[in-house]
Length: 310
Ligand code: NAP
Image (cartoon, rainbow, N blue to C red; front, side, top):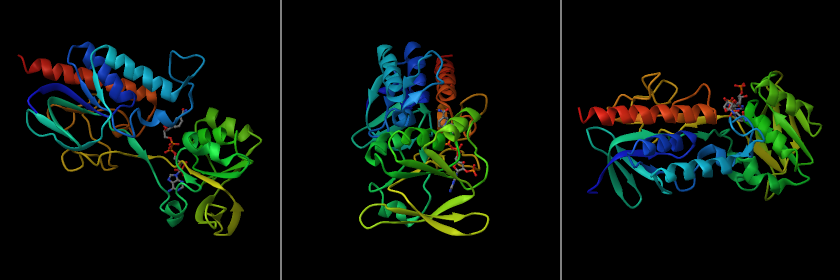
C-alpha cells in the first residue's frame, strides 16, 4: 500500500470511464476499479444505443463501453476488474479496498451507478433464472416463441418489450397506471408493435409453474379483479436505485438515497471525494449525462489536486 494514487475511480460506466479519460489526459494516471461482474455498467446490458452523439447508425452498448475503456487506457488509466469491498473516505489520504488489496489515493471519484429494482414478490426468487429476469438482452433468447410479460411503464420497459418482441410469441407490458412514463418515441414504437399488448392499471401479484414460470397473476389496480395469464418469461423493468452501499455511512445522501453533491459541481461533503453518474443523477439518467458528469468530476478532482500544490 506504499503508492498514493492521485485518483481512484470506483465504477466503469460512462461516468467512470469519462472521468478516467479526463484525469488520464491531465496526467494523473487514474486507477479505475471497474467491478468484477458489473464492469461497463448498465450499457453492457443494452442493445443498440441510438441517442449517443457521434453514432448516427447507432452503437451497441457493450461496444461503446469497450471503446470508452480503450480510450481511458490509451491515455494512461489502469483498469482493474475487481469489486470494491470497502472505502475509507475521511482525511487527506483515502483508501479503497478490493478482495485482495488496499489502495490509497488523494481523491476518489465515485461512479458506482444504480441497480435494478425488484417487485418484492416471492416468485422472483422461486423463478429467478427459470423465467424471471431483469435483463432482456441477457435472457430474451431463452423465450423464443413463448409468451412474455414485461413489468413497467418507463423507457426501460419499452426498450425491453421491443427487443423481446423479436423472440416471444407475444409480449404483454404490465403497467400499474393508465399512462406510460416512457418518452413519446419509445412509447410510440412499443404501441405500434403488433406483437406487444398492454395491460394498463395492472400489477403482477403472483407467479406459478411446476419447475419454471408458466403463469402470471395480474390484479387490476382500480377494480381489484384478478386474472391469470400464460407467461414463460417475466422481465422486471421498473427502474433503479443508486448503488451507495459502500458509502452510505460516510457520505451525505439525499432523502431519496442518491449521493448529495454541491451542484453544479460533483463535490460530496467530504474533501477530495467526488461523485458522478447515476449514483447522483435521479433526473436525467442518460449515458450522455453520466459521461458529462464524469467529465465534471474529473475537472473538480483535477482542480482539487492542483490546489494541494499551492
Ligand atoms: P423509470 O423511468 O423510473 O420508470 C419506471 C417504471 O416502472 C415506471 O413506469 C413506474 O411506474 C414503474 N414502477 C416503479 N416501481 C414499480 C413497482 N414497484 N411495481 C410496478 N411498477 C413500478 O425507469 P426506467 O424505465 O428504468 O428509466 C430510467 C431512466 O433511464 C429514464 O430517464 C429513461 O429515460 C432512461 N432510459 C433511456 C433509454 C433510452 O433512451 N434508450 C432506455 C432505458 C432507460 P409509474 O410510471 O407509475 O411511476
